Amino acid sequence: MFERITPESAGISSENIIKFIKTLEKRGAATHGILFMKGDKIFAEAYWKPFHKDFCHRQYSQTKSFVGVAIGLLEEEGKLSLDDKIIDYFPEKIDGEPEPYLKDQTIRDMLTMKTVGRSSSWFVSGDPDRTHHYFNEKRDMHPSGTVWAYDSPGSQVLCNLVEKLTHKPLLDYLKEKLFDEMGAFKTAKILKTPNGDSWGDSAMICTLRDMAAFGRFVMNYGVWNGKRLMNEKYLRDATSPLADNGIGAQYSAYRQGYGYQIWRVCGGGFSFTGMGDQLTVCYPEKDLLFACNSDNQGTHLIRETILSSLEETFVDEIKDQPLAENKKAFNELNDLISGLTLRSVKGATDSPLRGELNGAEYICEENPMGIKKFSFVFADETKGEFRYTNGQGDKVLPFGVNHNVFGKFPQFGYSDEYGALPTTDGFTYDVAVSLAWTDRNGVLLSAQIIDKYFGNMSARFGFNGDRVYAVFQKNAENFLTEYQGTLSGKRLRG
Image (tube, rainbow, N blue to C red; front, side):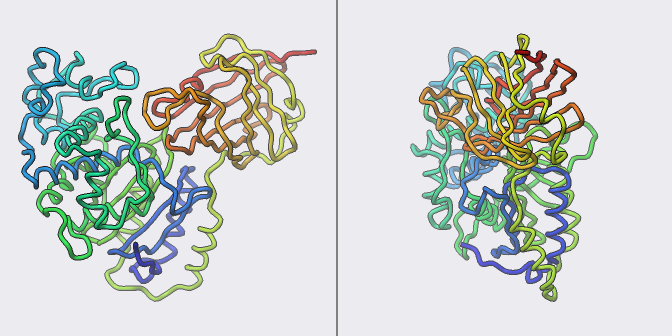
């Protein structure tokens, strides 16, 4: 789809990309893939094994930006006006008299997230129809069109509006209007909500190059290969800072304003932004695009690092004309890229604690995870297994010491194609697991879910004689809830 060129041909040194990648590594980012473009040419692309260019990755809230563009296409077709009241499109979803503030909320308010206020989590609402839930839940509201507040459920309602007016799933509509012409999103899919609607605020699954194509299209304000596919004005408005999305008076690299489901970021750019740092960042004045997939759930510091580094290392440094080729730096860059692997926890290569722990069984006091007992079993100093028993029975989680071991996370019942619907067929998520010795009596276990759903879980153990105390922490949208909390236990002596 895209031509490849060297960084120097794009007006940036290969050394800048090396610096950027090393910054991500230094800051502990769990990066899966990055891509840089100048114009319609890729000048750098890298994947952290086991990820690769054809991997279809969950984009989380970048999906909202697709919904925003779809609304613009419907406006262009004359099927709606941005100043229409949203409740007028869903009378069948409203039970009784709607809340007064909700009556006045417009499509434009929803695009800019100046809504009456978000509804509660749909994962626990018990209502399979998220639009019905949005309109009928009793909650604190305020006048729409006033202040920005992140409203993910509102984005889902906009997705349902697209599907209602087109009589097509969101992705099918976008393929018909844009993607088939672009030759993109051929392997893409969107997960569904429990009632079969497209999960429009969170669940586009596609390749990094697909995201780059979408970013390129929006940055061209509706033109693809010289052909206009969408009107320019809407996309210029959509990528403008129409709403102030700051939090307090603190500076944020990614809160520089908000358009129509699109963020403004430092360096004069706009971004499609998803949880865990799924990012497609466009700098129109520099004709520069960056896209990445990651799972940095649990910290916003990485996002600040990514965007600040992009501004300082690329936006401020890129030249209008090609640079002299730097073969040495280019070869170093390629060597660096070829050796990239998914982040793992790191510690000492071995520990005297390994011998003390190996095969020892710990009986746990009652705890939020429902873990009754556990043990660490080591094959050698490089790998082993965390064996435990919880409410589902006996579990085994293989790990590598200072490196990942790839397998299946042993917890059953997590969602698959339909969000918030438990599976009952033994389905499990792909996982990468590593272990690190943290100090003389401590060990850290890390599990990264790398499937249609992304999330991470860590368990930090401290041992003192026969006693153990552990802290489990999870960062995931609606799973790994069984792995959050603390436990105390005692070694079982035979």
